Image 1: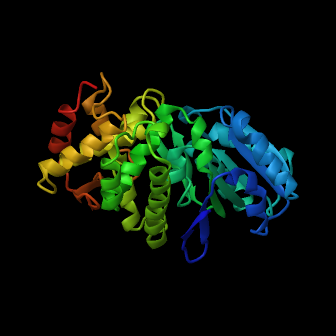
Image 2: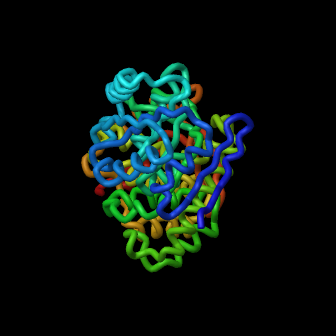
Length: 366
């Protein structure tokens, strides 16, 4: 049975479909969208050997003409040079306005494919087929696309909603443990910012750090509740005019950590976990939530096998400087998403540099 979660946007509404063996029905799902015949499948050198043939077979059996563009795997390849490669393939295969780009991969592939689709011929269709937990619950939903600049994450980008997000939970079986844990960081985020019940269900689970230590029922709950949370928020605030900013919980300091470690030492989920711990400590320091709630959050992060300390040798001053380059900075003030209880957060730009520094000092030695 497929779960279907609508993303209700005024102009670009679409559905998130969660279906076991959904990858083999990709062509069938796309046929219902009345797209042009040409499809450019964008993937990477890790995912394509695992799932590329199945995706292409499904698309071709539905009558689509498929070409592919394979990019190197890794956040450090999330650059304009990689986008150029997608453009070159699109040009070689004469992709017209009726064509569709399909992203088969994690968040990096999804972000880059979406940005290429947003900018090729001023915007063509694209479809998300996420293959990592992080992409399934977060990156594939909401239409944020883009690439990194050497001085900051996702500084170059566009809003471009997908026509469909197709999630096949079966593909998680080949996901490396570290990548699975990275996805759990975003799931925990939803528990803290939006869904206290999801948080409680995860806290009651004996293990969260590996796919095979979680029951199929809990995996299904994690996927549907996380996707529903993201869909709810995005439906109310498509382009981050207000509410959608809460999805950046843990990302302010998290992005700085990623950037300063060259996108190689710490992955996105690990950085978000560190950022959530920091945000929780800042909220405690400001009297916004209790020490007990912070302990509960940090225990769940640890349960998921994620870090709670800054990487060794990371310069606190460098983090403060990088925070000023964050795209969420307004009038020179860094905006933080801070928890007020498990299941609710607020956005503030009144956190002093002294408090930030004090919290970060207490998180050194990871």
